[in-house]
Image (tube, rainbow, N blue to C red; front, side, top):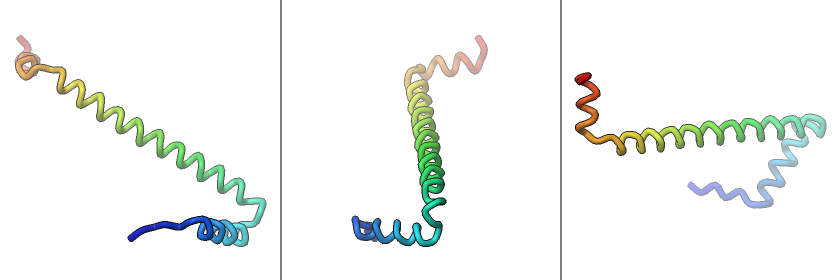
Length: 73
């Protein structure tokens, strides 16, 4: 199901939000939404980077080295 809103749809959403929340609350809502989106992107990037480094660390270790670490010799 495509979600192509387009310019008229965005204008309609903004007008409805302006009517519901009023002009004084709209900038606060925009700032809150922006900071939430920024935190989400940061968390997603951190999660992806930690997975990448974890995969790189596992591929750099030779299988025999893993066995030696477990036996302690």
